[in-house]
Image 1 (cartoon, rainbow over the protein chains, first blue to last red):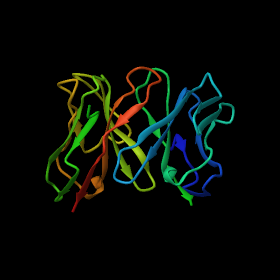
Image 2: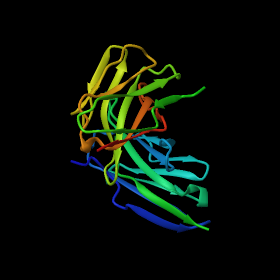
Image 3: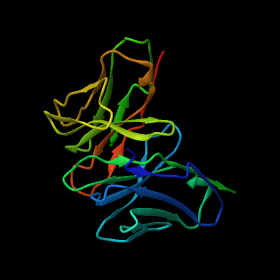
Length: 112
Length: 113
């Protein structure tokens, strides 16, 4: 039972345009959501997070949107840069738990 | 400040052999965890610990043992390796305070033949 789903295994975007990565979850108890970026042969690095009390969080070129009614979050990268090419994972956790459940990842390729 | 250090970086085992993947953190975090990454499966939680002497199972604990005798170290043991345990293993720390991110090591790539 995949509680966190990233239905697009890959995405290609032109440099300078917007990248939109999507994530869906099934557990309505999740209240904290994160995005990680992973380069080959490295560990995942934290990018941005959002609590369920918010519907948007921005950090520079990165914005995460949360739609609780749809159980959907998205990561927007504007403008996209070639260095953003990586695998992006979304993750979620619920109250009273230290377990972070990850999605399967989306490979983003930013074309120069 | 190294953060999370995993050793070894690469390992090849024969079926039935045992080994320990090491993880050490210098961030003074109470929470530590082990994930495995497989193609098309994302990152799956194996075991986690909320402090020295306390461990619990994650999503895929079978075939793995852990112990936590100090805050800094959280080794992952494979008692009898199987080809299904071929994977990339990541140790992570943090997350013990509500709404805080995990910090990952650079992984151990394990191949079981």
